[in-house]
Length: 135
Image (cartoon, rainbow, N blue to C red):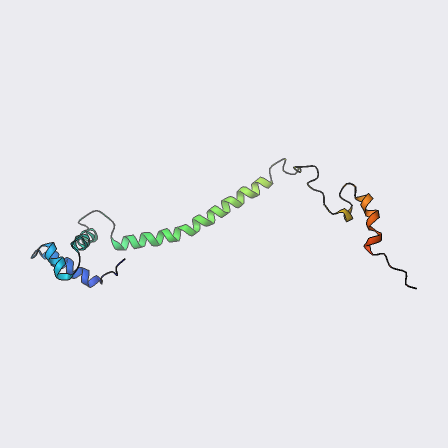
C-alpha cells in the first residue's frame, strides 16, 4: 500500500478541484496523482462536509475505538457465562452417583482399596523393607 499523502496536500488538491478551473484529469496530472485518487478525495470531502450521506473520518475512528473497548466486556461475559454453566452442572441431582462402580476407588494396591489387594499386600511386605537383623 502506498504511503498516504499529507492532509495539507489532499486539502490543496480538493480546493483546486472544487474551484472548477481545470478538469479533474488535468489536476491529477499536475499534482502527480491518479484521477481516481482525486475523485475519492472529493467524495470523502463531501461526506465530511455533510453533502453526502456516510461516515466522516472522525466518526469512523471513534466507532473503531468503541468497538475495541466493547470486546473486553463481551469476552468477560462469555467466561462468566461458561463458568456459571459449569458450576450449575455440579449442583444437579444425580451428579453425586459415580459413573462406574469403581470410579471412586483408588488404584494403589498398598492402600487396600482395590479388590484383591489383601492377597498382594502379604506378598509385598517382605519386599517393603522390614528391618534387617544386624548382628
